[in-house]
Image (cartoon, rainbow over the protein chains, first blue to last red):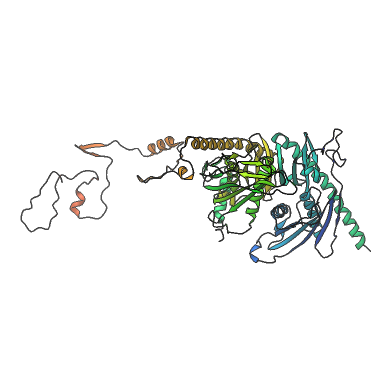
Length: 245
Length: 381
């Protein structure tokens, strides 16, 4: 896109951030009373809502249940009003199916599914406003929802996007930066062990820059994990204050 | 129909082999199978054989109105189909996870990397643009469909020629291939996917997994690169835990493999171009090897011959074989036969019988009642 400078000479981006700054992350847990776990997360202007049901008995076909682990069922959808132009097909198209698949695989690796054989855990994520980093916001929201539901996990799963402009890695891309045609890398990380649960990159990047890009994304994820941890602890304090006499 | 499930011992065997860095077909960890690229009679038709995996790609074009958001760009449409002829596990019209993954990866590899100049596909801005449709059909599934599909797609796109158009005011004339030579697409670079399969919680990886190896893998990392060492797309799936160094190492391996494969594609395109120019025969029929049955043939089975000499000499020392003894002209005796232990008559036991000695007497076995039996052709006995 002509005219849009993703990184100005002074080092400021389109929304005034520096290259390695994240957007403001705000989250609330237990937003729904009926679900086992729920969370609402805002990452800049991207708003995601995650709801977790489970672990419960496998509904539908019995053949899907595994004898030694829980099955994680994931559905990703975007609200029709989430994008600048009204989305005609919120779920069922290939992109959403792929996102659902990736979310499922990410959480299958992170959740201790061996503790719940022959059960099913449902994760539903909905994007209410999409401004870049849809997948990351979903993962972060789903992590909080799983923590709220009390399902044991190996570690927080934190996700963030990173881009590359003029030899500088940018952390946490917004929509304009993502669709500008530059590189966009989405990374889901388990911060304590440094294991990458999911790595997804589109658009061309020279091989030599890959190291710096992954490093920037990992640092951003670790920043997000600190925020998520703070949110969980604060929520716990609030809930314990309420239940205390 | 459901695919036959993998038995536990087969799974254990495959994982054990991976641990010992051995593969089923004798390849090394980073080796690709034999890649064969052939083009059909029409422009834009390509079959890729990766070992026994076979993939067919056909590129076609059509004049359509452009998208509202991009009035000056052509449209690329990708479609991959898993035909039931490829594997009994594939059912027609079933949106399986594999299908979604392959389609999305193909789209990402070719569309987002902008390997084709879509602006050049514009005929009349805002009204008519070329829609290039890439259809990939899987003919035989023996593992690693992603790589084969990406090689087939990019080869077919490089091979494809679109009809020439002339614009006069608002009239568009599309020339048929007989009237004017069709024009090739403008391709910036060739992105090729390389798949890495991870086993045993990410401790072992294999390049180009075959179908059996794919069944026991933990997860897959697909890196799409071009020969200029630019990464076009990375996708990790299967929920494996990767470390940053593993990803970097895989990207280095991928760059080597991609340059080899790009070399292969260019050679195949060059060959095809030469044959078409010289007026030789081209197409799939020509590329099939003519198999005539002239003799009973068996493929050579590779045998490990590294320490044959030492093993043979060891065996030789254990059993010392004596040299042959000449008994008579034309007969020799090696070793001594053991005494016949079949429990025959007593007089027979005394006679020393050796296996290889020829009897000098002619044995007469006849039921004739004649007194004298004349034997003809004595020497022949």
